[in-house]
Amino acid sequence: MDELEIQGLVKQFGSELIIDGISFYVRDGEFLVILGPSGGGKSTLLRMICGIESPDKGRIFLKKRDITTLTPQQRNVGMVFQDHGLYPHMNVYDNIAYGLQKKGLTRSEIKQRIQTATDKLGITSLIRQPATTLSGGEQQRVALAKVLVRDADIYLYDEPFSNLDVRLRTQLRHEVLNVHRAKQRPSIFVTHDQNEAFTMADRIAVVAQRRLQQIGTAEELLQAPANTFVAQFIGTPPTNLLRAQLSQIDGQLVAEHNGIVLPLPRYWRRVLKQTVYDTLILGIRPTSIIPEWLFPQLEKVPSLILPATVRSVESLYAEVNLTLTLGKDTVVTATYQQGGDPLPTPGKNIRVAIETAHLQLFDPTTGKSLNRLFT
Ligand SMILES: Nc1ncnc2c1ncn2[C@@H]1O[C@H](COP(=O)(O)OP(=O)(O)OP(=O)(O)O)[C@@H](O)[C@H]1O
Image (cartoon, rainbow, N blue to C red; front, side):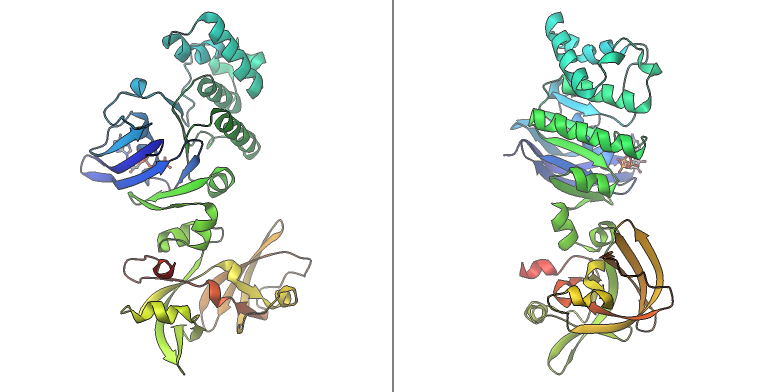
């Protein structure tokens, strides 16, 4: 059994089902990020692990112990909230010391731990200040110090930096990862920010629409989304999804969308032979649509080349996003790394190569990936 194991959690508020049978595990020393859109149930899940909410069904095990019905105090969980959770009438020192005093540590032990934690987080000069006089970033550092001084069995972070500016967020992410590495316990960090998830996570759990949509590394979510929800949610820009008809042309299996014909790699014939699809959803990663000026850099130019018209161009640092019309009126996004080529102007007619080897196929009814059938 892993350090934290969640089995079939269900939670309802009134008549509304918020969490519908979520299971996953987190290993010792692993940093798991729960990523999902607002209102998808991420905080509720974390609050059940912490013990602030109790599940209607399912079990939670921490270090092989069933903690499902224990109070937060009995669970030995360190948690950092979005609103930092500091006591406004106390100064920084007393805020950090509070939990340790309740655990019965000696004054000198408490002093020693606070000194080490505040030094690490660069807030030693603030320890006599009332919590209310601190900036948002300083308050979150104190909240982190409160967690750092503890010896918790698991560390939970509920969107702790969502109210802070980008520079502070980046700094504090490093601090959280430093705390995590120092503790080597399981950590769970909730966010709706993909960049935050991608830069911090060992694995990412996508939670949305009451369910765990997929859990895996950032690479796995990008390259092999489990369903159309994940395909559309992960990646900036996300995967292009097109409804396509399956047919055969001269013995070749093809997917056709609005006059655009995409030959499918040979292995799809084997997979799809066992199924009943005549329509499916085709996923094309923006990096699989390659504009013609990049052809000379390719080892092998994909054989499928289509005409396209540039609708708009967005250049972000080294990355360029092109919105293109393929065929009559199919709008797709392509992404590439800027290598000094002049940016195309809207209205320009170009050619693009499509890497069909990386196409993703999804069931048109359930939205589930079919790629998994042959992996
Ligand atoms: N105590 C509660 N009573 C009733 N409904 C609640 C309660 N807590 C959460 N909800 C509802 O449960 C749903 C999920 O909320 P939750 O905060 O878990 O989502 P989230 O994914 O963390 O969203 P966000 O990113 O906006 O914080 C929302 O519709 C919310 O209104």
